[in-house]
Amino acid sequence: MQANWNYPTAIKFGAGRINELPDHVRAVGMQRPLLVTDKALAELEVTRRTLAILADAGIATGLFSDVRSNPTDENLEAGLAQYRAGGHDGVIAFGGGSGLDLGKLVAFMAGQTRPLWDFEDIGDWWTRADPAGIAPIIAVPTTAGTGSEVGRAGVITDASAHVKKVIFHPKMQPQVVICDPELSVGMPPLITAGTGLDALSHCLEAYCSPAYHPMAEGIAVEGIRLVKEWLPIAYAEPANLEARGHMLSAAAMGATAFQKGLGGMHSLAHPIGALYDTHHGMTNAVVMPYVLEANRAAIEPRIERLAAWLGIAGGFDGFLGWIRSIRRELKVPGTLTEFGVPRDGFDRIVAMAVVDPTAGGNPLPLTPALAAAMLAAAFGD
Image 1 (tube, rainbow, N blue to C red):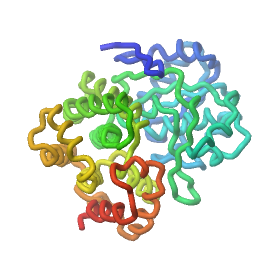
Image 2 (cartoon, one colour):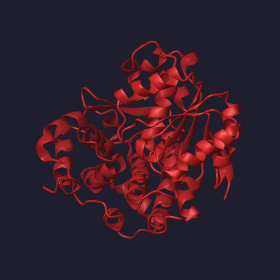
Image 3 (cartoon, helix red, strand yellow):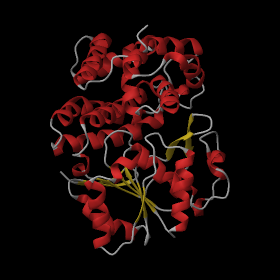
């Protein structure tokens, strides 16, 4: 199963296509790229193999891996220092959401003179950036979750304030994406589950957003179907390339769809991750049914339509039952308490959630009272 897509990113999809990486590096004008990934992935064979492919093609490639699971501005400064010291001329963003986001941000900030937070995704702040200072980017996802490989933004934590922020620029979208399911075969079950349910949360929140965007909505619906049919298989059969491939597609579809909006799942997950360094996708999965239930009055007809199309009986209740069932199947903690999140930050999480950039896409206005009700339910109250 191989394909080339432009939607609008040039996506090279199929098993074994990592071997094409040197050709794409040269095509976008890189001669000395910096491969950015996270600490754990840097030690694995998949990364060593990728660096060897580049070396065999005569491409001198640096490696930066000082990237936390929730990347911070401190990680970015370290990456920029290595990028500049090594005379690099482009970035290969490699791995899951952390490596992809930080890699894109290194490329974005490589030639900027203003501070990072001047480019936060607020209004038209992105126009402050110098487009000529943005280095070329190739993205190579090794997990199927965030879809950051097709996105125009990066999520990064302000380490001093413990707040996740979004940096946006149209040219942060990679020029080429290599989606090779062979690269995701080594994911442990926990990461397969967490990233896959992150893709589901992107598609589901985009579908439920009240904004008008029929194209994104259609993509979201198909992404949900792919997750429903293939995530349990990818979890149970880690070497199943067909399942891995469909999940890579679902992840990219989720990130394409969520330009329609996100909502309460992400509004809660972002502060929880910033404060307690939890896995983003798994955090979304933990809060998912509680956010759906809290938004029921606004989304029930829409969810009934989705359930019917997916072949789930019972309308909203049947769909919610499926969500709870797949969470159990993938061993997702039932509550935030089981997930290890302490209650001492309850009020701070609520305060951060209602001002998170994703709050505006919630189907109901995300007031402090509604956010607190969602959070209390997610803690098991």
